[in-house]
Image (cartoon, rainbow, N blue to C red; front, side, top):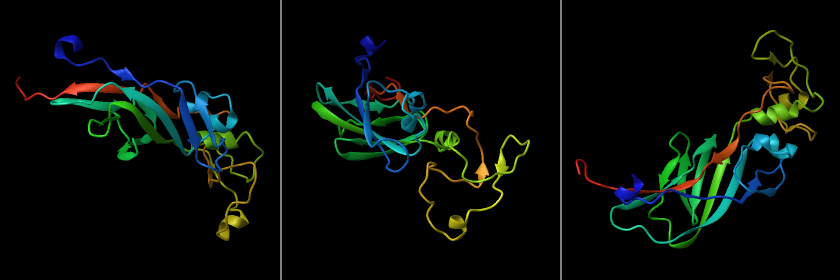
Length: 204
């Protein structure tokens, strides 16, 4: 058990979380979440359909610095899809597959610590969100489960110009989704935990 091994129970880093969103992708500049939840469940459309990178920030308290053979790990739990972790201003790298866990022993310090988690998701939800709006292009109607190709490339695209401003954020040459397609989980879902570990030689 944890008690007999000398390892403390995990410490959860709970809400609220401050969240800032990549600009010009339909979401507000920033907001707050009382707890981590998939963005596709959010009541605000710009957040629910957001695709891009969102930065989650939090402050948490640690009682004492690890010493000896004891180590401290940050465990992000579930993340859709990958995360860049910054702790106390130091970039600790990108986590993209389970377990989403990283050793923070040398970076964390007693007292207050500042955590930033930059989470990048898929384009799926934004493509579905754009399907709620009037169409900007015509696509072939097929019986394929994978949608249909665009009938004609828009002039701005063939001339290598930026997409003109409008309601839709995205542009694709293939229609993958419609307005009733199911949204996918998005962002950090957690729980975010600090886990203590003890290093011991094999066989002891």
